Image (tube, rainbow, N blue to C red; front, side):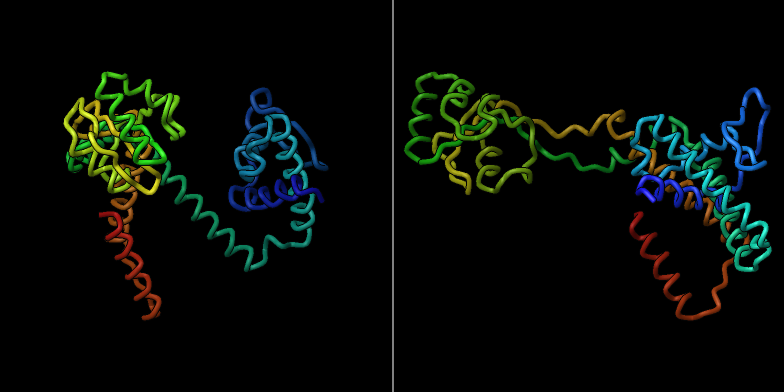
Length: 289
């Protein structure tokens, strides 16, 4: 069996046991795309299968994804029919697995309805503002640098700067750093982003000033120009909205679980297992704070 077909088949064994066969809709809206004996495969079932493909297959072109999904569905239906004839659906182990899978899918459906689909833009914005307000702003500088191999070369560059030579031009001509084509531009950075020697020198400079002595680091000798200083602005909401939404979803989910636990009650008979469960939940709660 090819790797592609194996992945498709494995994926759809899980799909079929977890979700069951798709219910046929109106024939015009949900046409039959294939038959396995007298069992029909509808487009809705194929779409469900495509959406549940193994990640390795999900990257394929649409036509190949549909072919892989259909191949997996046909394989599943072929053996499922034989399994039904043997009465495996009445096996106690199978029933327990189906009960577990049903509850898991109900959990997922409830999670989607009350967590994923329940998050509003207003909640995301409010959580973003809360997180931003808790951030202690850091100073950052916008700088350029010229990296030289020797101290004498760096001193010679400083003399040219003293004579009025443009810093960016000198960087393009003299620097050994890969960013020389950008005139040595390093953009904005906080103190912890650079090696200590470089940061100490850069943050000690006033805006518009350059180092009057070469700054030695493990990379060589630097001449640094600070073009701007500011307090680091928070990332815009648009940039971090997906991560903020995850925080909102996490809080909603934990609130749902806490409410459900309070109403239902949770008892764990095995003392060792209870201890491990309590410690795991405590660690998770501490990690969220």
